[in-house]
Length: 466
Ligand code: ADP
Ligand code: MG
Image (cartoon, rainbow, N blue to C red; front, side):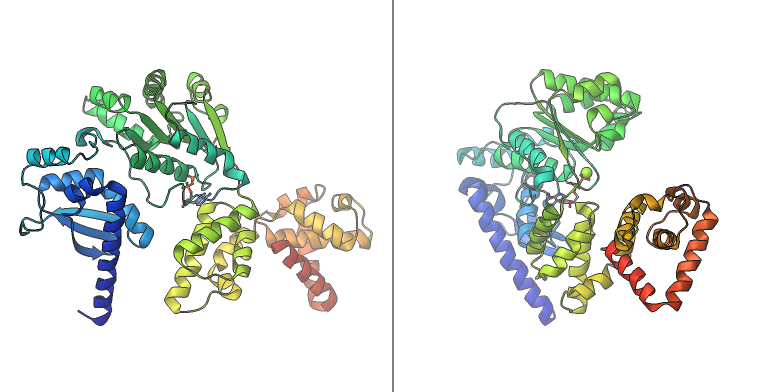
C-alpha cells in the first residue's frame, strides 16, 4: 500500500465514522443498533462504497430502507461517493453482531426496541426510479424565476393533507423540474417513511406498462400504482402520441386523485400546450396547481454558482463567477457543467482559476453562445454606434453614411450568427444574398486598409459578444 493509499484509506474511514454518527442522530438509537451498526466498511472503488453485513436478510433490508440515505449523507461529505453496495460477508465473526441470525428473530428484536416500523420491503419503491442524492431542497437555489414552483413543491412535501391535485410543474430543459421532484421525494422519505412514494419518468412508466402487457401481468401493474400515496411522473410529454399508455395513465391518475392521493407531474410545456395528448387528459392535468419555472436570470445564475462552488469547495474569483453568469445563460445544467469543467481543469493541472483560464477551458462552449446573438441586436447596436436610425438597416437609401454601417451590420451578422446569406439579406429589407456577400467582402477589405475602421468593427464585435 502506498503512502497516498494509506492516507486515502484513513480519510475514508474518518468519513465513514462521521456518516455513522449522522445516521445515528437521524434514525435514533434503536434503528441504529439494529441495522446500521452491523455495517462494516469493506471497500471504496471510484464512486461506489461497499459495506458488508452478516446476513442476506439484513442486506436486503438495509438496501431497501437505508442505502439511499447512507449514500446521500456520505455524498454531502464527499461528492465523489455516488452509490453504496451492500454485500453479505458470511465469514464475519459474530462478536460485532447485535443481530440474531434469522429474519424472524431480527424483526422481533427491532419491534422490541420500538423502532419505527418500516413499510414491508415488497411494496416499497418497486417501480420507483433512483433518486439523485444531490437533488434536495437544501441544494435548490431559489430566485424569482422558480420561487413559485419551489413554494408549491415545498407545500406538497410538507402538507399533511392534499391541497392541490395534481401539482403540475413545467418549464424548459435544465431548469430544475427533476431536482424539485426528487427533493419532494427525499423529504417524504425522510419525514414520512411510511408513505409510499413512487417517482419515475413517463418513459419508465410506459416501459413498465408495455412489459406488464407482454407478460399478461397488468393486474399487478395496476395494483402497484394504484396503491401508492404519492405518485410522481417526470417528463410526461414523453407519452404524447402514445395512446394506450395515455389511457392507462389517465385511469391511474383518476383513481389516485379520486382517492385523494397526491399526484405530481412535470412536463416541458403547460397542460394546454401539450400536443399529442388527449383532450380529457390535458384538461385533467390542469385541474390542480400549475406552476411554471421561468428561464434563469443573471441574479439566479450567480446564486447557483455561489452555492455550487461552495459545495465543490472551490475558491473561484468573483470576476469569473460574474463572467459565467453573464455568458452561460441557456440553463442550469450547462452552467453547472461549465463550473465543473473549470474546477476539474484547475485541479488536474494545478492551476488557479482565472478569467483567462476560464475562457480557454470553455472555449467551445463560449463560441456556441456567441452565436446566439440575434441579427436584430446587431442592427440595433450598429445603428446606435454610427448614430443612424434603426429603420435605415432595412431602407433602400444608398448614401454612404447609412450604407456603410448597414454593411458592417451584415458583416457582423455573418460572423456572429449561424444565419445563411439569403436569411441575412431578408432581415435587411429583403436584400439579395449577393448584396450580403458583397458587404462582407467590402468590410474585410476596408478593415485591412483603414485601421480606425478596423478598430470600430472590432469594438462592435466585442460589445455584441459580451
Ligand atoms: P429539468 O428536469 O428541468 O430538465 P434538472 O432538475 O435536471 O432540470 O436540473 C438540471 C441541473 O441543474 C441539475 O443538476 C440541478 O441540480 C440543477 N439545478 C436546476 N435548478 C437549480 C436551482 N435552482 N438550484 C440549484 N441547482 C439547480
Ligand atoms: Mg428532468
